[in-house]
Length: 284
Image (cartoon, rainbow, N blue to C red; front, side, top):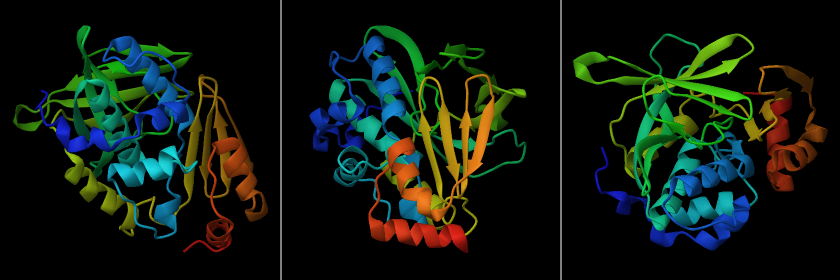
């Protein structure tokens, strides 16, 4: 399924040393499965998920210089499109073959939702299998999941499963499930139709600006580790464990800067923090 168009991801513009330092990776730089697993885990546990620019009506740019200024050098995070174009540039620089894809976030819903989630299907030089890399969802998986029907993975207690279902016109739908307090729940669906940077620019514009997008006005941030998943939804801060257990608390505008920096690894300016705080008090 690889198209050979990895040049579209502009890996030559990436500051690879800065990226690897950002995620704390000190290992080998080779297109192997071991390296892919290590990079994936380091990325999702180091760079948070957040939509602050969308909430503040600041344009979200997907060119590599802009993305690395924000996610690598700026102690910020991003949403799926930003994470995936960055990770794709890294994979290209290291010699991996991959295809980008679009998915529909379902979170248990059965209705058809817009294709607004970016993913990658990757192969390593020393392994013939295809691997799903989902670095931009905000809550795992920690490592790639084999892209095979019925594949299950358990990463430090966080459990995932892939299913393939026959779709219309012979195009298979893939469903990623996650195990939680209520058992298995499908998280998103996707097809293997290749996507490119320009496709993500279109999807990102909808996510950041459309009035019906949950990310265009509602503050949302996530930080993931092997032991906890922190989620901030406006003023509600929830911490989940691998078994689905959770604790919840409310935060106020006065706490926001400290919580974002200390617990989510996100640093924003005082001016932007004040604007976000106004939205928490009087959401539009």
